[in-house]
Each structure stands twice: as C-alpha cells, then as structure tokens.
Length: 64
Image 1 (cartoon, one colour):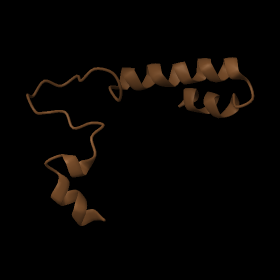
Image 2 (image 1 turned 30 degrees about the vertical axis):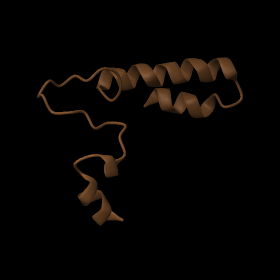
Image 3 (image 1 turned 90 degrees about the vertical axis):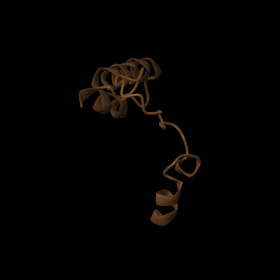
Image 4 (image 1 turned 90 degrees about the horizontal axis):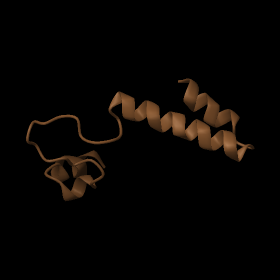
C-alpha cells in the first residue's frame, strides 16, 4: 500500500507524515476497516472490546 510506504518515508517530515497518515486513514475507511459499521445483521459490535468482556471470554482464555 503506497500510503503505508509514505508513512515510513516521511518519518523526519511532520507535514509529509500528516498527509501520509491521512491517506492511510482514507484507505482504511474505503476498505471498511475503519469508520461506521457497514453491516446490519443485528449482532452486537464487539470491536474495541477486550475479549474477556465479551461472549468470547472462554475461548480467549483457552488461547493464552
């Protein structure tokens, strides 16, 4: 992804870094990785929750 490479290359230029990070954000939103939930199946959204605080707690404990 060109935007990610731009972040790496802009490490000493604050303005270039700001532009590159904005490009990464825009790409992730376009891919559905960030932004509003795009599915409507009625299931609760467990993103940004610790697994131990979700119905997946038992599974998560077994992974450790």
